[in-house]
Structures are given as C-alpha cells and as structure tokens.
Image (cartoon, rainbow, N blue to C red; front, top):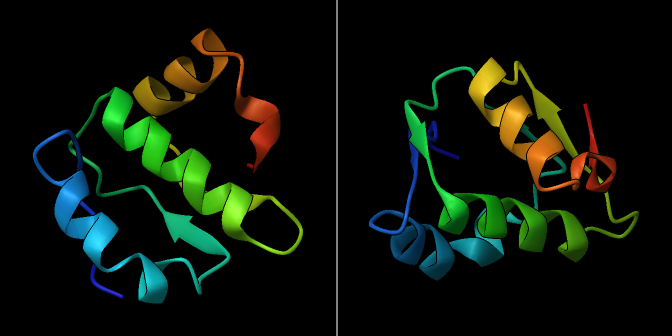
Length: 80
C-alpha cells in the first residue's frame, strides 16, 4: 500500500476506489499525513468497521488527528 499523505474530500474518492486492497490492512501509519478533514475521518471509520475485529490500528498519530478523534468522540473505534 502506498503511503497516505492526504485524507481529504479531494483524495478520499481515489482511496475509496482502492478500498478492497487498502482495507486488507489492519493498521495504518499516519505519520506522513499532511492534512485530514471529515471525509478522511469517515474513511478511517469505514476502514476500521470493515475489519473482522472492528479496530483499525493507527500508528504514529499526529496531534491534530488525535484531537479530531477526541473531538468527534470516536477514539474508541481505533487501536492507538
């Protein structure tokens, strides 16, 4: 899987078209994510819910993404 650097309304449609391959992974490294918006958060939620145990492991979560997860009260959907 290629490194994800943008999780925005502009990039999620392309990621969504590759979701069969992307959702095979049970973890994602967010260290290189430069920007994220609600579409990106929704993508991560769908990815997490697609997994057998329902928990996507987020690695190297930047502070701004952690803040969004806490603000939206969805941190428990992920393994961090």
